[in-house]
Each structure stands twice: as C-alpha cells, then as structure tokens.
Length: 176
Image (cartoon, rainbow, N blue to C red):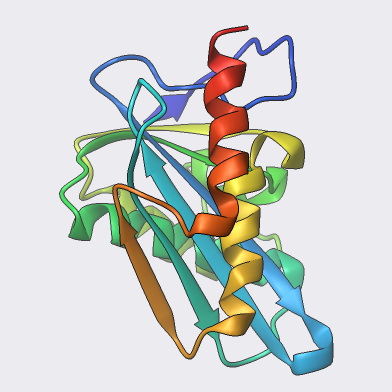
C-alpha cells in the first residue's frame, strides 16, 4: 500500500493511471436531521463512472467519524463490485493519513480507520490520495444526496441525472 501524488494544476478531478480505478468517497453530517450521508464514485482511467452510490446513515456522527466510515464503506463497496486495484481518494487528511499509518492510531476515529484498514487487505493493490474538496465534488454531492433517500442507492455506469454537469466538468478538466 502506498500513496499517490497527483500534480494537478487545476481544481478538477484527476484520473488514476491505467489499470487502476479511483474510488472517491465523502461523508456529510446533517446536524439538523441527526443523520449522516456517504457518497462513493468509482471511475476508470478515462474518467468513466463504473459505479456510484449514496448511503444514508440514520445517526448523527461527527465529521471525522463519518469520513472514516465512508472510507470503509467505499472499500467494501469496491470489493462488492470486483475492484481489486485502485486509488482510494478522499478530502479528509486525517483519514487518508490514518489509512497510510502502519501503527495503531490514537486519533479520535482511529478504530473506524482500523476497520477500513482491515478491508484494504482484501484489495490486491491500493494506493491512497488526499484531495481538496473541489476535486471531490461528485462524491460530496452523492453524500449530500443521501438525505433524500431511504437507505442506499446504486447507479451502474452512471450518477444521478442532477450530477451529470459535475461529471462532465470533471471530464472536461481531463482535456485541459
């Protein structure tokens, strides 16, 4: 396991190297509703969506905890759809650094990160990447979308129609 450094001159999502998938994840807290949401999108080296999902968690968690849970959920989801070589990318530096640590974590979401680390052992090749929120917009939007669903929704080779503009902007960013 290792890290992946993307030298991105613009604020767009960047694809993984060929033969790898990129798993973007995010978690969102809905304090008013006492719930949280998870968004995951898995794309190939061309930027094409393999699968995406939104999941509602029926409890309010702190930001660090839902990000750690989202990382574990993203890995579990990737394994369920057969992804074995990937880059896991999120906008929580604490979670990404925690996943890259080999020793027991003392940060608050440490046990949740350890759960995600256990799942990472089932993936043949897994790299980690921290990104800024503006490069993780699609996963963030999917996490926010979770508030409007009952539990869990999956889109094969697509995203919800209202997020097509975000996907297209990411793909246009590839040609710049």
